Image 1 (cartoon, rainbow, N blue to C red):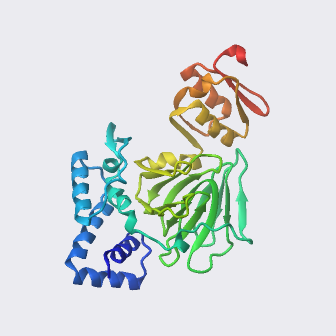
Image 2: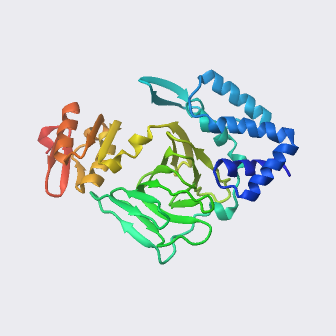
Length: 348
């Protein structure tokens, strides 16, 4: 067996998708081949680690790992990402901040799946459909026991019963999933610009068709995200995530970034919370429009760029706007159908 097939077996074991036969095959390979065993231990170490070690140590260890595996390093993301841990701010590169998954992300060239696995099919006829309007959230219990929290202005399609070897649903918008474990039936969420694949875990997906970025963050378990590229000939990557890590895929630029996150913040919306951390008022307005169902109109461009931070739970639109406006001195007016925002009072 060649190295690529060996690493494919390893990736399937890490993601929880390996069959009993594949696990036995991998055990035999590890027992018979010392080089495979060394590579397996190395990959296991990075897969299982969840804490962020010292940046210099991480980068040095990863360089050694890549050298031993004869892998290129040009897929490492160099941009610093912030993370809050124990009351302090760390500015690590994405690889240092997400050490537990960096080695797996880097070696995705080996985590190849068949074109059939990566293919995002169009929704088939006969599926149940749940669609939330703006200002509405809902909870859905699927046939396998999985639970879905569907956010406002979102749509999900799913079968009344899961048949065959997979459990597949189709999402447009934002949802939080608690997937019932079933090692024999992977759970697959089809998005317009990617696919999320799991066995049993909880995670948040944000994939609105009118936004430029798809985001997936993990609360528990492990998740595989497969981006959809416009160029069919481009190699499909598989990004594996562990808890409190987030993948963001900007599909116009076809760029993937990985960063640590607080999963509780990402899925706080299902508890009626809205958390804004250094967000522009224009971005916040999108959330307000979805949550309260009123069209947001900016009377001037200046107010759009105001950067605001705030946390709200089960507040009215009037309450949210009152406290936000006190932090940045903008003006607003709420009518029956619209929320008007302006930098100057005389513009309203």
